[in-house]
Image (cartoon, rainbow, N blue to C red; front, top):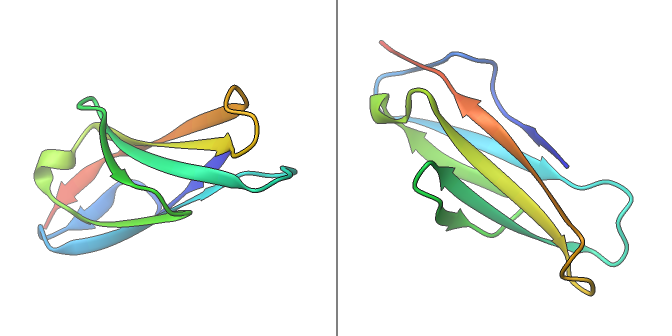
Length: 88
């Protein structure tokens, strides 16, 4: 599983939207996605892409994507995307 997004650090004025993409390769059947904000572990999305507004409070936090096989619940992989924020 790979998570891709903008280069780091992310420059923001507190209103910039960032889109992250979670990709699972060579899976059959298809997977389900779950995005979480860390360290709170709050579920924030369930699609392949996750778009959110970046603020200074996101600095040094992470967003995690978990991709799970819909037929085999024990087959899952996850990856994180670190957030490094520069406020303009």
